[in-house]
Length: 203
Image (cartoon, rainbow, N blue to C red):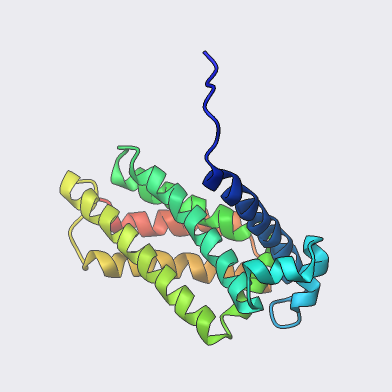
């Protein structure tokens, strides 16, 4: 039976704002990827979004704020997929591999976008945001490592946070090589690195 209830006034007010923010962030990603973080201006974002300057500034007060929101959105989506993998109930080794592969997919979808992220690291705010993202990654991966040791699929060894940092560092190193050298065989090396890592972690 079709509901006859009407949306609340609050819902009507908030939906357009959320849509506008999403529109701005989509345009901002394209703009930052094309021009780079430092070269892009708020006027560029206005043109790319198709909105008025007043509308853009209503939602975001600065370029930093736009990029931070874009970064936070990216991280939330990435870790959302990690959390879904962790909640699957699969063996820890399979979860770690899935999270490894999810990360590669997210980071390698757009080289120009990844270049924009790397530019953002030159900004103090960008470094703080990335440090928080790394800490979250180590915590989440460390939890899965602990689960694997408890279920007997991963051997005892260095503290889980150190294992997690090694996983993150290995992937980041591969991504950096691919970023500076388009001919670098990323997919092959990701597979090889995973086999090497698991050789030292499995029981």
